[in-house]
Amino acid sequence: MRKLNILIWHIHGAYLTALAQAEHNWYLPRKADQSEGYIGRGVGSSMPDYVREVPADQIKNLDLDLIIFQTPRNYQEDQYEILSAEQRQLPRIYLQHNSPEPHPTDSRHWAADDPNTLLVHVTHYNRLMWDNGTTPTAVIEHSVAIDPSLRYNGSRPEGIFVVNEMKRRGRMAGYDLYESLRQDLPLTTVGMGSAEIGGIGEIHYTLLHRRVAEYRFLYSLMRYSSLPLAIIEALTIGMPVVALATTELPTVIENGVHGFISCNPDELREHMQFLLDNPVEARRMGNNARKLAQERFSIERFVQDWNRVFAEVVGRPVPA
Image (cartoon, rainbow, N blue to C red; front, side, top):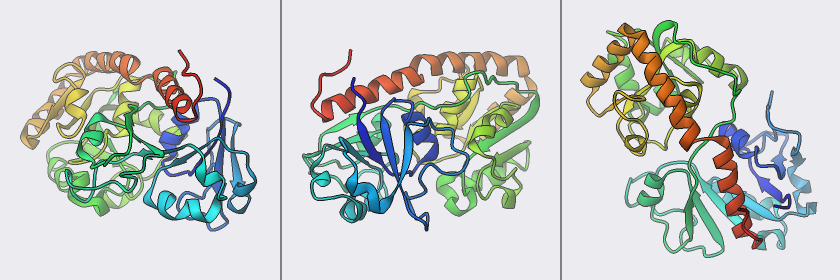
């Protein structure tokens, strides 16, 4: 399809890096104060050169085809601040990354009942649970853009959890479970705020997965979230996953095949110990995990799905 000129705010760096694999002209607004969504490409970005940052006060001068919102602020405030009246009439998508908050079933989406916006969810669970009103919706499942040569090693007999600000996020991110399980098991965590709770600290995205690949398994203690990108990243490099069986995960991880899922922390403890004691089995499950990622979460499928949605939204022929 013809390359489109697309405006998007920099909200979720890992997701944006994957989305930018769709070869269009991407424009990221930037402000000197680097407030939410206005960091441009960001520091050390691995995004392609066709992803360009533009001073926010110059966005009105761009010849755009499509606007992508990702936060309430983008939708309720930013568009009125940086877009011209004509640009606000352009085709538009609201990309919703998260599961509904504050209530899992009764949270009404900010773009509900907006017939001029397509609301794209990243999991079927999310679309099911959000109150979308009459706004048209679609689901595009995750993918990740990481070094395709990276492979699981698993030589370090420890589990690792990739999560930002786990302590601040509390029970939702499973901080209480982490504190309990690591009394018996060699577990660590990596991400913003992890050093203060005994973890590794923050590692730049371009270096993160090589480090993660050394650990025996990736675990996730998220009680309530979208399908975490860290899990997709682990599957992609061929790493077994141990996680809570909540939200979309029961449709992804099969027990004893790609790793283990359970809502029982005692069972999770047993599964983690099994992988620590059985590196051969961990590698077998990791190989299955990689096959799953190639079949369900490939970057090629992800780009194809997004290009199809772009074509539909801007009223152009849908690519095969």
